[in-house]
Length: 77
View 1 (cartoon, one colour):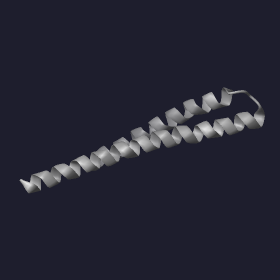
View 2 (view 1 turned 180 degrees about the vertical axis):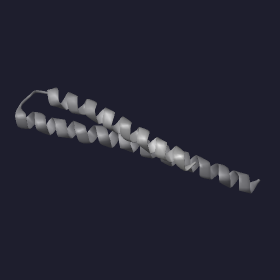
View 3 (view 1 turned 135 degrees about the vertical axis):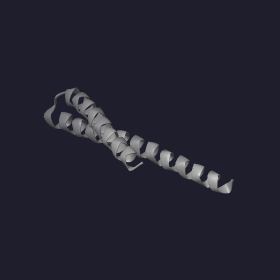
View 4 (view 1 turned 90 degrees about the horizontal axis):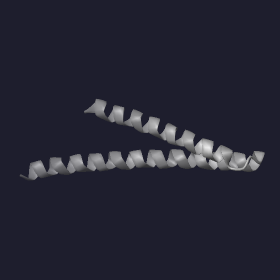
């Protein structure tokens, strides 16, 4: 019984780690592109156009990186 419980705990920890990693990837990607867009908006004086564009790019970049990470994770199993 203890052996099954330990394997179950390992599986839970593995998936919690994966979910945490995916969340950090998305948040960091969006924040990096947000601040880059904000910096360029202040530098070029374009209002908030570049910030919005860079947030969208950050979402797509984060989504693509999450997709690649998930594919790599499931290839190992």
